[in-house]
Length: 615
Image 1 (cartoon, rainbow, N blue to C red):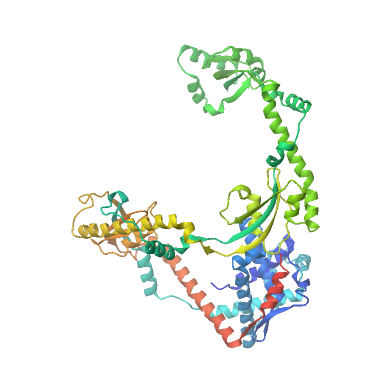
Image 2 (image 1 turned 45 degrees about the vertical axis):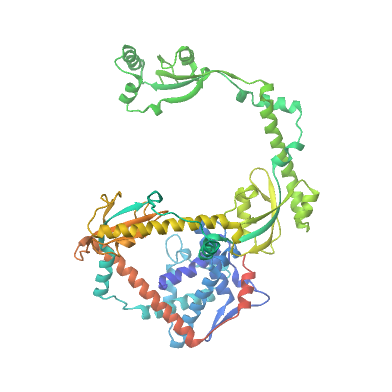
């Protein structure tokens, strides 16, 4: 839908707020490509470079705020954002040109009211704050006159749009027809015909069959956009064999981790604390006599067993209760015994034996740990040198020759996940790299580092037939099986329409009742619902399924009750949606008509100059 007054004003304000509070912007001070100030004209109205740059950066920052991920200019190009923003800026210029031709404008009072409504310009008491206003504009690289003129233009555009879109009400007949279509319900029965039910044999495909299948299913055999990337990388695992660790270092590490390798005997214990000794003793007596068990006492206290769980503890952790607890057997309840919070009952749920690991037994694990740690430090120490080498013009190939880094190549797509592509940091860097980018050192996350270079960007392209022949054959067989089962289903559908039941025909029926067109059935293709709304009661149809066929029979149609109060919300929703669609069409026609009458000129070289200065 076309932006109304508030929408347009917010569009501008976001540009100011993002520039002011996030540190982007200052486009008013940028001299694009040695003096480019405009991109073209719509009639007599200029399309300025700054308007386009601000709008594009605002949309890119909005994307980042929503996704939580940085957006590069290359990504903005891929998403079509650069073209969308350019089209919007051209449309705004067209509306500005039309308002100027009509002599349509707003006064200073209207502009002042707009400024007072912008929260970023308000003080703590909610009134307009001149200092906040000046500060925000200064950080956005705008002067007050420039900004106020932009608000004036936005308001004038809003008036023009409102005049065109006013009175776009929809007739009741249209709404009744729309609601009847959307709220109509259907009840139907369907059944699946699986490959096991196939009664015909599938022969061998000819070369022509396979070639036809390959050509008619190019999407299934098309490689996605691929980046040919050369990279140099090093990980701790690559250099562990070159790292030596002395026995003294190993013994020192063993002493530091002695508590990890040598664990005392422990118990799995539950503890129930009481407010006084008498209550605790009474509970212990009930458990000893068999009148109640530990779980019962816990429940009577309004607790759950998880509230009493202490996990595994050694004797020292239990204080004065330790000796009694460690003398008990599994499932014994002991106490009352002391606890920091009062007298308690303790139940023993398990015994964990003492664990003693000698230095000789731990030496292997210690060596692996120390070697990896030292390998990480070696890589950390070389990172700055590698970065300096790259900054000085060294190639990845030269790095591989002069250091322990290894050279590799990958044809990377967004589904690559093997070897170095298993690292998230590499995938992110590969997704962002563009032609002309210089390699820089980045972390792999496990102590390793890498640098990469884009050698070639290949657009989506079909895989050679020879490389996917087996997959083509499998697809051909699946299609033949599905076609054969659909043909069998057509015969069954005729019998169902003639009065026979699913059960009589050896099928397991699934019944669905009172479904509207936008209903969703878990595990069932949308084609089932589409077929049901394309049939008359008693009719049946066979349709392709997932590896088989589905037979659908329509049982009943329930017309929408237009007098039902429960449909009032749906009517309002549909009315708003339909009106929005009509308004959008009218707005599009208005903008197109203005551009056709006034004429549009856009200098692509100027657009490219603006994009060159955006990062």
